Length: 73
Image (cartoon, rainbow, N blue to C red):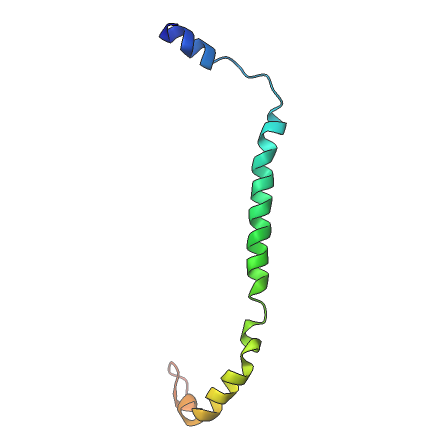
């Protein structure tokens, strides 16, 4: 085979069902979005899971917290 024959065979049009061939990309994208949605939902209510620690810290450092901040008095 010559180079011209190889290029001609490679450039030959592919007559297939393009939609069926590319549906895999949509399925992969959908699965990735589902996974990311699950990760996002897993962080719901994280602050309230450790509310007892936040309350204990606030009681122990109550005077320091009223003066701390970024310019708030």
